[in-house]
Amino acid sequence: MKKKIVQMSDLHFEEYKFSEELKNNLLEQVSEENPDLIVISGDITAQGYVEEYVKAKEFIDELKSTAKVYVVPGNHDSCNVGLRQFKRLIGDRRFIHNDIHNRMVIIGLDSSEPDIHDGQIGIDQREWLVRELRKVREDMRIIVTFHHHILPIPRTGRERNILLDAGDILKILMEYKVDLVLNGHKHVPHAWRLEELVTVNSGTATTRRLHGTNVPSYNLIKLGEDELHVKMVNTETGVKADLAHYPLEFKFKGKLFKPPIGKIANGSLI
Ligand SMILES: [Fe+2]
Ligand SMILES: [Fe+2]
Image 1 (cartoon, rainbow, N blue to C red):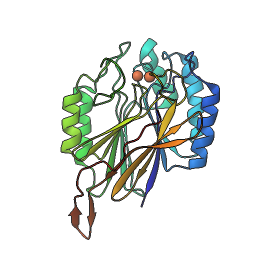
Image 2: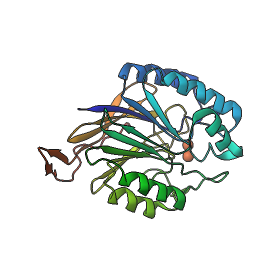
Image 3: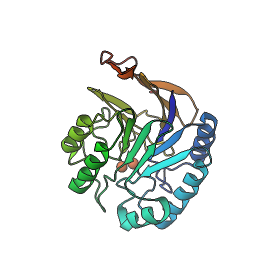
Image 4: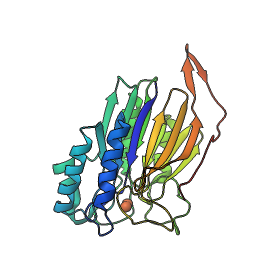
């Protein structure tokens, strides 16, 4: 059974490069796609101010008429005591949702730190994550989302504002066979595969805070029994391009099938 996931990030409501036109395109395009779930991987606001959160909440409420929406905070959302507004208007900063029907577990973590741009998952959340991962049924696909990317993203200039405990979190994700990690932060779409783990970064969907010739975009992810296909979608034009296409290991009649680890496609909108 193929599941359709929309991943968007770095909406930055009320930022000076935020675009109402892009926001409206996004709402229209996502509603047409009719995904099974929507993940927003952080930086929903420009600076964590209340009025930005209010606008972001209005947008998220509209998305909820299409599918279930999962949101984690980013470094910008944690500025100016923004995490209090996140809790009040958006929801818990970390969560686990068992979607038995779709055989998926969605886990959200907060990688932000108040008023600084570096991030970390931290020892408490890592311990919580391990406890939760131990309980996951073997036949479930596991998706984890947090804002700061776990592996460096190319074509973004000097590496900075990183996840400080990337090594520790990466080890947990690989040990517990997480299938998919969804991040944002750099405003550049990208996918990496490390052994069985696939990490997917979304660009900024609704702003023109862009590196070079990048375009505003979000990701359309199709998670099948034996493959993962990621397309990025240009929010301006609706044009789609392959970002990554990987075979996945799968079980059939109790036997584990391990495909060769390799990329089928890796494209670009640039
Ligand atoms: Fe951002
Ligand atoms: Fe960020």
